Image (cartoon, rainbow, N blue to C red; front, side, top):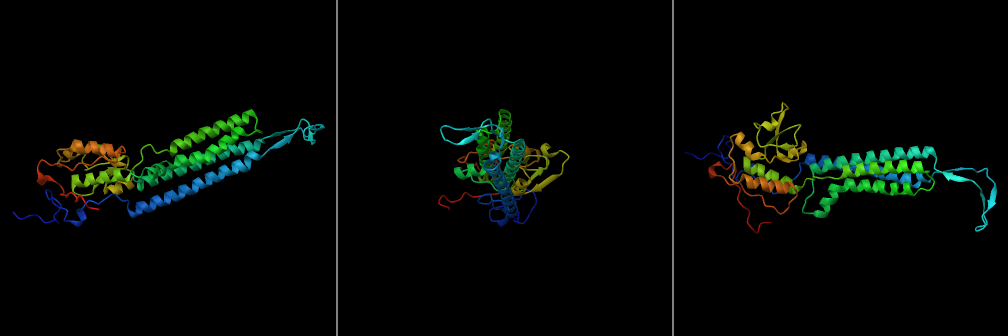
Amino acid sequence: MAESSDETTGAGVRPTTGAADREPPAGWKPSAEAKATATRFRWIAAVLWAVAIAGEAFGIFWLLRQRVVVGEDGALVRDPETGLLETQGATAQFPQWAFVTLLVLLVVIAALSITGSLLWKKANRLDPARRADKARFFVQNQLGAIIAVVAFLPLVVLIFLNKDMDKGQKTTAGIVGVVLAAIAVFIGIDFDPPSIEQYTADQSTVIQLLGKDEVVWVDGGKVYHVCDEVPAIQTGSEIRTGTTNQAIEAGKIRLTLQFPSELRTCGLPVPENADEITEALRAIQAGAVDTPLPAPVWADPDEAPIVVEDAPENAG
């Protein structure tokens, strides 16, 4: 029987590394559109954060310095230590209009900080950092929380130290500031940040299992799947098909770890070491950077959707 050509698309044909459009990429990279979107989100977030910090500066250097003097009609007395005259009974108070403005300012700073954090997280989903670069990975993913601390902490501290506020004003403004700061910091924290390593492992798995970078998902899900016949996506929503990059751009954060059962459901070959691959993916998705991704082991080598040779040890 004549050997099938690389251009054949029927079932049972194994793409090889000789087909240029079938070679798995060396490492995951965002598409040009995703990169541009991530950059736009980051610029908008930076502007919002800058305005929030500017609002904090306005509160510190102008608003908290507002005061009105009451009791100015008291008798003049001389301070024996300084020799200066002062009005007995006159006291400085923080005006009510400034107190209300301060509360509004705290809410505005929180809104700006939180909106910036949400946009920054979306940008990181589209264009993540490498987990192996620990310092950059931490700063890039937790920058929203860092900015929230910067935008709130000095202002909240100075509220509690303000000597012109009465007890009620200081308590109210302080509690509002602390609560809003805590909310902004919490939302700014990314508890499950993506990484290039994770996206690369997911993409490599898909290509080795299916022979091509093609997955399916629905709008309401958080993960993407290996075929369109699985129960998880039979939700009545439109089933979408595309590359792993397109799935990520659609908000899907990773490959499902249920891919072995999905392959069986769709009548596709399942590697003998599917459990090992699943555990490796689980570790990588959880943040491991030194976990190798096992190559699929097929009961019948002719079932392999794609043949990918190991790179030479001295490559790169």
